[in-house]
Image 1: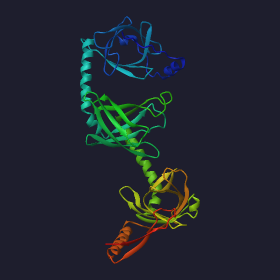
Image 2: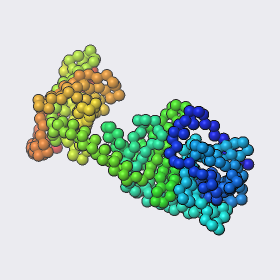
Image 3: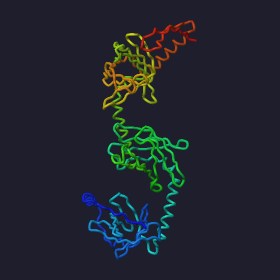
Length: 443
């Protein structure tokens, strides 16, 4: 035995619902006749009579249940059975009927049966059509994943948790690689991967957001029909269901929205690039930086002498090279590889130099004098110490290549008769043991 759910609307909810009614009320007589669903619906068929009765078909053409129906003064359709009532907002357009649940917002769509059609045959025909549409949709999933008009959006989610984005996939072996351009400030680009999993009859698309811990791995269900397929998933952004309810994440085709997202993304990228341009021009393609940095340790109260040699990588816009710090009290020297870049922090351009040992950030930059002031800190350590650098040399790609050519020629003139002497401090800056002398010959 199936029962129509009773919907209890409080006074406040009723006021909101009444204020939201946008369509003109229909007359009960306009509903008289038989209707069959054209989308997913619990009530697969409806047959309204002039006497205020409606036959409701759930599982096919032979299980009709009788209920009373009426159209209320506020335009709602009331279906009642055994003292229990369910309300819908009806919209009628010719031979098309839509019933919207004010409780969930879900809509069910129906078409009026033509003369000579029976409800049982219409429901069976719609079931066959639904099965065919499902098979077509599943077969079209690989083509859907290759579309270049896809967007991703969060429906009914908490504000500011996840910006909408333009999403794109590229086939990669048995799966897909891709990216999301988020419509956010600052603009953010995230790489993703995806796979179609499950069975041929019930596939799911699993998307891994490897750089977004709030999403992680999301399993999307498929909805819609060819060509208007879309993917949807329930996601939660932490907490309990009481304070962080599930919301719906959808991936769908929307060329207009995609263009708007990408236009804003590219515009914001251009604006930030304009802010960074003076610092990029300052560092050029090859730069030597020298300066000092302070320490919080009493044994290192004299601080360090810092030296960096960086060459620009045009493929990713970073500078790579070598850093060297010398303890000004003990002379102990540490040499390490570094990578540098120009970024934005609080709408201000900054230069960062990153290594496994130290992270430098310079936000006070005199581009005319070539002086950088900021701080350094150990990775994962929020406590910073002052650091200052000055550009000792900066040249463009042509000048850099000439420097390298000159250095290479000088190295090629060396022979095994040349002996170099140096010392290595095995304990770095501790200075508790004398350094080890080293002799080097080049062959």
